[in-house]
Image (cartoon, rainbow, N blue to C red):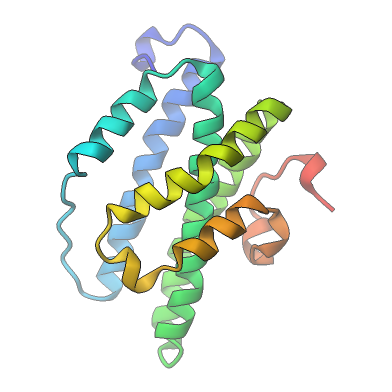
Length: 185
């Protein structure tokens, strides 16, 4: 994606803006960690993950678009799973749970919009490719996070991702998200 000054069309500008606001998710997670009074170090990704991200950015659009769509679906599955984990862990701390859900909800609203936007530009072939990449992509991504095997059910997340629809998301989030008309009931 070119720098803003070199974006030649609307798609380049949207992609650049999208990249920037993805980093805002990290800020929301940092706020979540403050609820726990935790200082968090953000370690670098492992070499294989850094390499994969570098290769991803250089893919032709016909391949990049399905992978990007899959990564957005992976994200919402992760956030939805974390939503449930937080409900279990903070069942006796309603104020903390409310704040965590508020912050996580902001990210989820954004992710649902990304899913809708990316899905709007994929045809049948793109969706088929995304479904093929998704299980491998999710398992490899979460294998790089040591805590994942303790707090996540990756197999469940993969199964939910493969049959994703908006009905499994809290209404308070879907009401605020942009969802394509063809995906609404």
